[in-house]
Amino acid sequence: MWVVKVGGSLLETCDLRRLLNDIADHGVGKLVIVPGGGVFADQVRYLQQELRIDDMTAHRMALRAMEQFGELLIAMDPRLHAAKNLESINDWLEKDLIPVWYPYDMVADNPAIKASWDITSDSLSLWLANCLECKNLALLKPTVPEDEDYSAMHLSQLGFIDNAFVEMMTDMLVKPWWLFYQQIESFYNLLDHSDGTATGMKEIVHKKS
Image 1 (cartoon, rainbow, N blue to C red):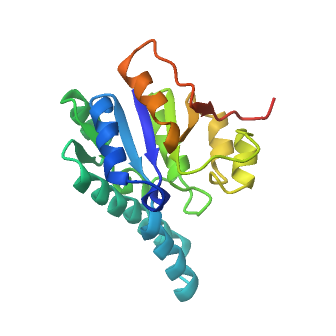
Image 2 (cartoon, rainbow, N blue to C red):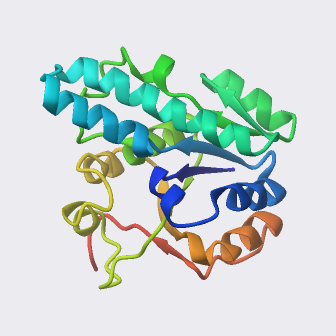
Image 3 (cartoon, helix red, strand yellow):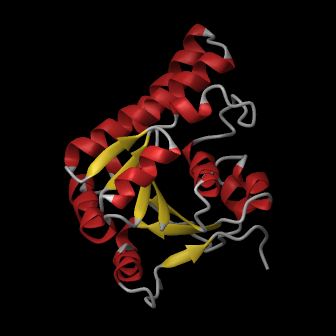
């Protein structure tokens, strides 16, 4: 099983409906989608700055922003379904469908997750994979780092992943991968064949070797 974080910025860079349809063709019963916040989370950031909203309120609104983007994803393919907890996720997987995680119920009042912009959907997808005892996480991204450095600290410093991701990696037995949307065919090969390879995916390592 895979957890796949689908970034909101993909709306601006690709045919997202077609991408989701292809993911569903290969991934039913095999993966869980974590929606990014996209334009919905951007609006929360703007409102917090303009109206000086406290961090906890912004945190809760950002979680709802992820769910709003999740609603958009679900509207694009009938095989995608909302899942608010681990039981619901597993139920959809058993039915050979694709759960889209709605994080609010599991995260909003969880003391283990700080109410901060340091934790975004990237780190939350890592956290969910750990909760599911899923060893593989793919961050589906609209771009690649120019220097081909996939160390978590470097990606965080460049703003490709959030600040909490590096620290969370040290405590979890989850292997995160960078998945560039233009190389996603490699990921489909991995889903279709247990012995398949994913040459287009780059492992996100804790430290640069």
